[in-house]
Length: 198
Image (cartoon, rainbow, N blue to C red; front, side, top):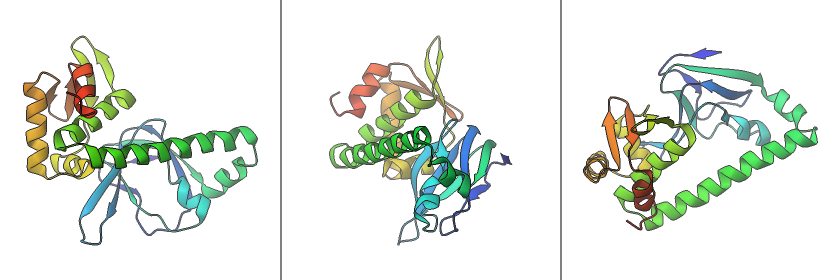
């Protein structure tokens, strides 16, 4: 199934009826805070499964999934997921996915407690590079589907602080930026900043 840029795959508060496997493109997962501000929770790309938690627990969607560029996804009814769980291999794979998400949530709590904006921006870029980057002669190129406001929200920082962090990472030779893309020129230096040891 095709989703155009800006189209919601599902919306926070919806009842869960379908599960999505992203084949191509980027999906932003976000939720609205009590203040009314949109908070970016994560970015999902090719190979990622989304919409599964609400199918499993029967609760309404806890977030919105928005196509941030053109997306192609395999869409299955929620019942297909629950039927698949009767197979031990499928259940084991889903447990691995959920465990990875739990570990990621733990890392994010640590990140927010221990890192400044520069470290959080470096962490996000490192994550994108590891998951979705393409090796080129000059480094690892990552398509960056987010606006600066969305990247700032994902990093838990203001837009101004995020822009300054990107500029600092450029001046340190860690990254080069282009329109909707980032090249990680020095992955080891970026990793050090992402872990607060630079």
